[in-house]
Amino acid sequence: MGSIAWVFTGSLSAVEQGLIYALLALGVFLTFRILNFADLTVDASFTTGAAAAAMWISSGHSPWLGLLLGLVAGSLGGLVTALLHTVGKIDPLLSSILTMLGLYSINLRIMGGRGNVSLIKAQTLFTPIRDLLGTWGSVAIMSGAVLVVVVILNWFLATDFGLAIRSTGDNPGMAASFGVSNNKTKTAALMIANGLVGLTGAVVCQYQGFADIGGGTGLILAGLASVILGNAILGTRFMFLALVGVAVGSVLYRLAIFLALKLPFFETTDMKIISATIVVVALIVSQSARLRSMFARLSPWRAKPDLPEPMTVVPNAFSPLATADAVSAGPETRGLDHEDEWPKSPRTPRLKPAPNVTATTEKGAE
Amino acid sequence: MLELTDVHKTFFAGTVNERRALRGVNLHLDDGDFVTIIGSNGAGKSTLLNIIAGTMSVDFGTISINGRNVVKLAEHKRAAGIARVFQDPQAGTSPHMSIEENLAVAVTRGRTRFLHHGVSRTRKARFREELATLGLGLESRMTHRVGLLSGGQRQALSLLMASFTHPDILLLDEHIAALDPERAELVLGLTEKVIRESNLTALMVTHNMEHALRLGNRLLMMHEGRIVYELGPAEKAGASVDDLLDMFASSKGVLSDRTLLG
Image (spheres, rainbow over the protein chains, first blue to last red):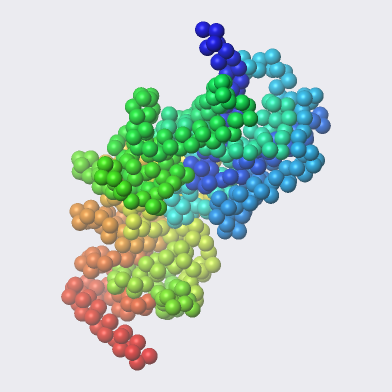
């Protein structure tokens, strides 16, 4: 019994981290899933938010305004990516990588040329609740804060403008034909998403007591893993559940890393390879038909689609809400490598896009 | 209403693949005109609709709507007055959004979208009413994702989404070509009803000459980027499919001779 207790010592800290990084994961959900935009700006805009907040707070200013500053700084990073893509007509992936690269220098400038800004002596958000950290109390407070963000996003995505963003991600041609300016919606979504990421940076630097120039490295993967995990568990049938799932996924991701580091062989320096492995496993599980159906059977609380879904779209891994559909649809929706898909084995029959699969229900309705 | 003057469009200009899709098209539509367009593949029918909608730019010529030249206006801005239904049933709707959410995007056509709740109670009531006119039972499935619908249902929904805000011009690009005969007839019937009841100005591209004759008050035949025949209301009422076939044959003859001589 003693050894089990030892394994879980400090797991609440992992939950806390998961809840904080849930904000980042929600940002990633917004770009990767809702907007269908592979945005790698995250790695740098996180640090931009952290750097801006850390410089502000370390000079004795309000930590709450520091949050706002982080949010604005992050969203400006998103704006740069958006402009490169919409005005510069540069591919999404490339424009975000360019922003990421350029922001590194900007981040160093913000931090006054130092690679690390300490907040140990400064008054942060966490100073008043220092004693609560690592207890259920702080977990409750943070869950509440994340829930507020989830509720706001859920409301926003159901407004006229939010629906326009979703239609841009889902079918840009259709969006344009109804007067949606795809450039405007993309810009807004990228700014909101990276604003959330910058906000995460501002919280994290206060949580850990410093901002580091390399603090954002690999966070896009953490966000993506949270999105994939969360959507696999809670589905994407309902936007609210999808958003909650992303937060849950973030917590699970941090717990998985935490527990892996407890294994005898691993050292703290192995964190990156563990993160990478978790993402690889999540990706493979979410794309393998057999593992998926196993997983679906194992989780009875998963939101089930209301009808057998005739897949009329072949999404890639980044397409909006693809993964959850993939749970119910056939191997056609494996994603990522759909360009070289060819029936390799007779055991995996290819599901042809079948627009009339629901013909029987339709007839009934007629 | 809609006026096209000497519109030219060439693809891959200056290369071996150069294709002159439109070679000086002139077209005038009055309010309430419903024009059907026929013509062989590559005649420029779809290009014509695309340049009116703004999906493609013109090389030369003007397009004016209600007296305003819209040649330089972006597609999403023209969409305020121009609605489209595409050939591909998947093109006109958003598969991962619900029926009511799709309708909410459609109902805000041409308006600035703010933070108003997309599927408000009043809108929902209106959507239910409008969906009921399709007679497909979709009004009881409003929260279902559009990706779950069959091609015919999606195309009927696209048609509703395109038309229920009373656009100035409705463009139908072979919108029933991908459907089986039964559903094609259903969507065609809905098309006729919607255009008649809302008195819309519409352009419909089709490969089915019987449809082209049955629907609309005017008929255009295109060939190699030009409008080669035009039937007004009186002539169209008296024309038969055989007449159209004769026109086809003669237009080909005329044009190939002209090409040879030119």
